[in-house]
Image (cartoon, rainbow, N blue to C red; front, top):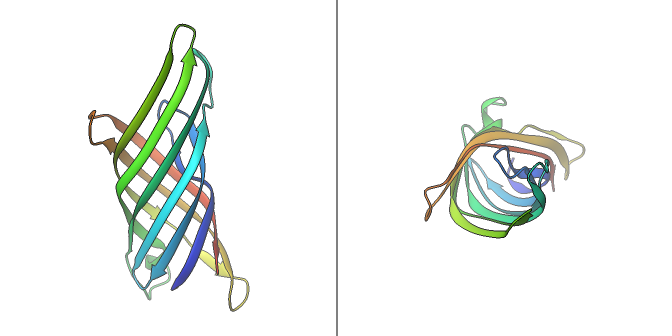
Amino acid sequence: MNGHYISIGSSIVSSGQYGGIIGLSYEYRYKMLGFFISGGGSTSFWNQVYIGDLGGAASAGVKLYLSSKKVFLRNLYFNYLPFSYWGYAYDSYWHHYKYHLFGMGLFFGYSPIWYVNKNMALGFNLAVGTKATYKFDIWEYINWDLGFVIKF
């Protein structure tokens, strides 16, 4: 399971008030640890009050996998994000708003992969967790992490 992994999709998607983030992440996995960085951009899935919004996000963190040998357990992990950034700019009917938030996150997930050949594998990533900002005490209560994984 050691190696380089790329996840493409909504790998840092928020189910909170801002809609979703489509992103790309890179992870290096060694035994039961994974070290990763991710980034992406967002737009609102709904436009009831807002004319439009755009945003961005970036994260860096560590994944702890529950096992390196048992097949089911080696796909389960805890993901700790000591660094998370998400920023948004949007226009309402009356004002233009900008947010730049820094915080942390904690996720629990499942990421199985299947080998295509000796050097490559494909899979998916599904996790649920939460994020909180350091400065404003704002929580994004439920966050979903969903992506397609390529190992090389």
